[in-house]
Structure formats: C-alpha cells, structure tokens
Amino acid sequence: MNINDLGYFWLSQGDTEGIAMSVVVLEVGAYVLMAKYLFQKKGSDLFYFRRRIPDDVRRHYPNRTNSYLIESLQTKDRASAAKLAHRKALEQDALWKAIRSGDVAEGPERIEAAKALLASYDLKPGQHKSFEAVGLEPDEFLEELRFQAGARDSTESRPNWHEDLPPVHRLAGDLFYGAKEPIFLSSALKEFQSLKGEDESSRAGTDRVRVVNDFIECYGDLPIVQYSRENANAFVKHLAAKGNKTATIQRRINSIRPVFRTMCREYELEDRRIFEGINIPNLGQDTKDRLPYTLNEISMIQKACRARDDDIRWIIALLSDTGMRLSEATGLMTNDLVLDSPTPHVILRPNKVRRLKTNGSERTVPLVGEALWAAERAVQKAQNGFLFPRYIDFTKTPPSHKGTYASNALTKWLRGLSIAEKDQKGTHSFRHSVQDRLREAQVPEEIRNVICGWTNKGIGSAYGQGYSIAKLTEHMRKIALDSSD
Image (tube, rainbow, N blue to C red; front, top):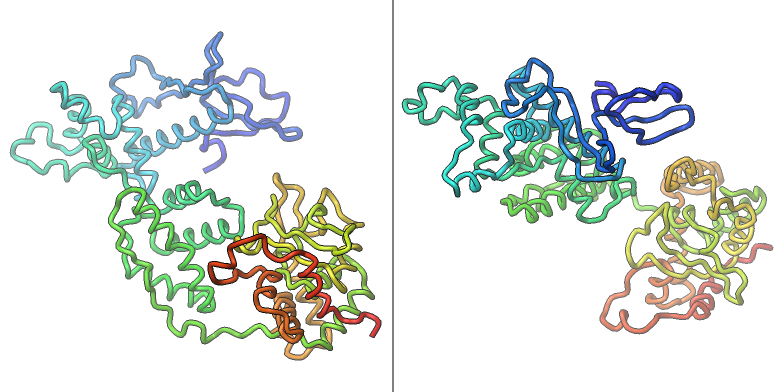
C-alpha cells in the first residue's frame, strides 16, 4: 500500500494545477500534500466527499443514479474535511476488498466494510427500529443478503440462512438490527488515550502504545471481550522470553490492564478481568538494587564535572546536589530557575516537552553546592528557553524530550570513572545518595519527601502551603560538600 491508497498524495509545487477533487492540506518546502476526493461547490465553503464507484462493485449501490459517491462532510475546515474523507475512503476500500475477495481480515477493517455496505444502501447501524416503527423493511438490502447467502428462494426452509453470509454482510446485518459494534483492541487503545487525555507521544503514552501493539502482534486485533486469561498468561511468558525483567513485565501489564478495564466500563461490556492478579513468576527476585554513591565518589565526580565544565557535566552536578530525576533536570526551562534570590532554587513543573512522574513531583528544590554552580553555568548556554538544548528535539512541534539519549551519555561517562560496583550505579543513584546524606544530617523525613517529590502520609500533610524555600535551603546546605577539598 502506498500513500495514494490512504487518500493522500504528494506533488511538487507547480504540478498542482488542474487536480480535480483534491485539496491542499499541507505545504512543506517544495512539496504539497493533497487530500483526494474533496471538492467545494461553487459559492459554498462546505467540503464534499466525491469518489467514483468502480464498475465491478456498482451493483452494490442500487440507490445511486450515477457512478459517483457524493456526500457533504458538514465542515468548512480543510484539515477536518481531509480526515473525514480519509476515513470514508478507508471504509470503501475495505468494502470493495470484501466484495472482490469475499472477505477482509478480522479487525476494525471489517467494521469499516460493514458500515460502508450499509451506507451503500443508505442505511445506518441500529436503524431497524426506525423502519419497524413505520412497518417497513430494507427490501433491497435484504435481497442482497439473501443473494449472498444463496437463499433467495429458500428462506423458509433455511431459517438460519444468515449464518451462510460472508462475514462482512453478516456483520452489516447484525449492526443494522441493533447489535453492538465490537470494539477492537487497536480502537480501544485510541479511545482510552483520548478519554484520559493521554498524549501518545508522552512517555506513558508511548509505552502503552508499544505494549498494546506487542499484544496485538501476538494474538491479533480482536474485540476486547474475545481475549482470554490464557492470552494474558501467555503474554507474560512472551515478555519474559524477550528478556524483560519481572518488574518491567509488571509495568507492561499495568500499562495494558486499564485499557481493557476502562473500555469495558465505557461500553457496558462484560469485563472478565483477564489481567487482574496476573502471576509473574519470581517477581522482584531478578532486581538489582541501585546503589548510592559514597561521599568520596560524589566529591570525585563533582570535581571531574568542574574540570570538564560542559552541559553533560552540568546535568550530573545538578543531579548530585538536588536528588532530581534525570528527566526532571534535562527538561528544565530557564524560567524554572530563580537565581537572583538569597535562596536560589528551581521550580519543577510539567512543560511542553516532559511531564513529571507524579503529582507530588511538582515541587521547589533549593540550589546549593555544585547544583547552584551547574545551574549558573547552564543558563548561559540555554537555547529557545531550555536549559539543556542538547536533549531537546526542536525539529518537532512541539519540541520533544530526548531523555534516553541523556541517560546513555551520562551513564557511559560515569562508568568510565573510578567508582566501586559501577554496574549498580547510574544517574538515579544520585537520588539515593541525596536521601542518605539528608538522613545523616538528621533532616526530618517529611522534609526529605518534599525535597525529593514523594508524598507525605497523613491528613495533616495536605493542609497549609508547606515548607518555605528558606527552610528547605537551610536543610539542603547541610549536605553540600566543600568543593575546595
């Protein structure tokens, strides 16, 4: 399948004149992206869908007086019209494929084909009640179904003749007579992310898409009620065979489970809870604890950062004296820094390139020791409002965060230093180290949680505005190392 099959095609500029039934959707440099099958009537701003019906499927459109499908898209917006036309073209492609080959693959494509078949007879899903109310039946549609089942003259002797229908025709009949439209897993994923407002390009969104697509590759794109506990257990084995650790497998299951749970609830379907209480053999036993850096190692790392004095080392220095997560640091913007204050600090909050891990992760963190030095150095090299532009992809709109690249680069450099048990230490180890240093300084747990972005327990913790930045800075200064050592 090429891009033309999807209802779009590219033309170089200068070649666009005289193209019928097409609308420019996007211009990029010397190229123009056109949407096919669109036109506007003279004097009207509304977009219409217009597509020629191939001769070999004409008989399936008995109500058409000409060889074209023409339908108002009820919109004046060209981008919306292009999407609607694309959807209609896909439905027709699925129907015509079914007519020519006798079937289409199980999945959303079959739904599209069934809806397109109904539309070819000017019918809609669930419309039988309207016909029944006035004592009518869709005679032409029923005649076509009988023909497809080979039961035109023998319906009385074959009461179950509809079971002999091709799958698309049977589904079209079921939908017309009120059957619920099955929701396939691929569609369930899209609806879930839309319902939850989850950006599919975010870390959580990307992970969820990857897991669901992996599940579909294993067991097919089926209506969500057709999957079984056997599929869920087999998926655990599949993930283990791919080399995933048990904690990662648990995270993958936690990612796909809410798609099933939420969509079953929204569509009032039976939720058989196939992913609930799933057994992951030896869960947690293959986990290697991330070790903190020792004070001597932190001092050595910070001196090495001063010596190199570049953006990678500024990030490491920032982590070493704040306990921030790597993604929190690399996604910082210049307006997150407050340096012209007796208590310099950074405001951690979501922005257009990265979210925070939890609601409690939104916080204010004092800048002391090498973290303050790193922030002052980094702000001088900021670009487009970002503190570490190396790890921001500005070619995308909006810009995207390249956290994985940062993790790889920083870990590689750290493991090149003289550090004990370095295979169990990385960028996240600084977070452990800050906690240990705060404990040694006898900083109260509640303040440690505020600094690192963990939720404090108890009703009282939710009252008031929390600790002042002056009080937090007082405690953070207790752990700053003397860089002159």
